[in-house]
Image (cartoon, rainbow, N blue to C red):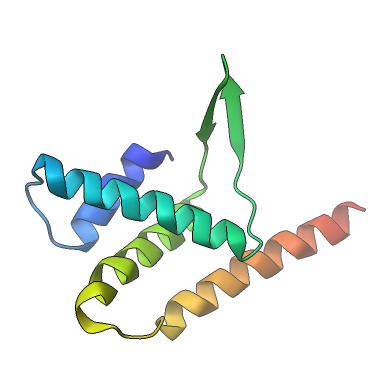
Amino acid sequence: MNKADILILLQTNLDMIVLDDTRTVQLEHLIDASIKYIEREGVTFTTTTVDNVTTYAFTVEEADIIVMYASYLFRKRKTDEGMPRMLRWALNNLLFSQKAQVANDT
């Protein structure tokens, strides 16, 4: 999956049928921010570089977590709520599974 796929999933998650250019830019920004915040937690996403252009290749699990995180950021701006436990749990599981995979590979 790529960022375009995640944008469609995020749009659906937020019940947005039609996006104008401003809302599209906002959601793309939230996706990029979510990716960076998740990477700061220690998660590593698979990337490929072709002709000096780096693109992500997300698994279904990674894409789902990015959508959850971006949805949380979108909704948080109105409610100022803390991170949902479901999202924290999913992030921890992804991180722990990646760390366990690295440990098994060595």
